[in-house]
Length: 186
Image (cartoon, rainbow, N blue to C red; front, top):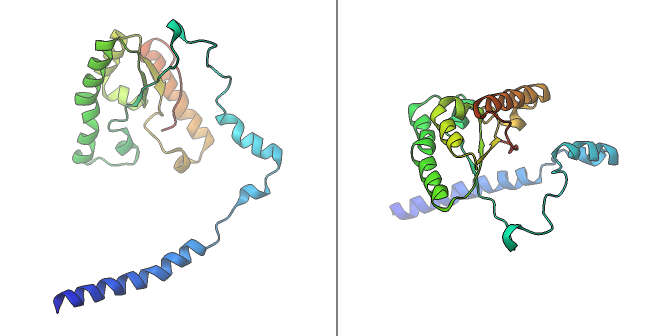
């Protein structure tokens, strides 16, 4: 009898939620992009274009392909940016520096592989030892991954985005003695 009651309750829940889901799927979503001119569309897309092609006519040593293995070293920054200061959440981010990075560096050292690391500047603030590890291995490159892994769509403020980007560039330039090589949005 209990099994039939539980099954009946489950079916009642499914059938009560289903109409709401169908209605939500049918609601009209605004599409302001349909009203943009060709020039406005080009203006919106232009800032994120990759630029000139970097593929060489031939790869060094006759290689047929190049591979880029890159890492985002977010650590605690995602949680801090979101305002989370719970020790459990922050300790999860610490793993990247204490366990992950040494393993990656050992593998790269073993095979003399250069790596690309995209790192929020606050990760560098929290882990100055990490900066020393990268300075000891100049074959690796550092790219910007935000100031504190800020969520740009939620920020929705071009001036604030520029301020945080400038702050991150200044930090990495000062910390590494050279400008970061690229940018990957946090």
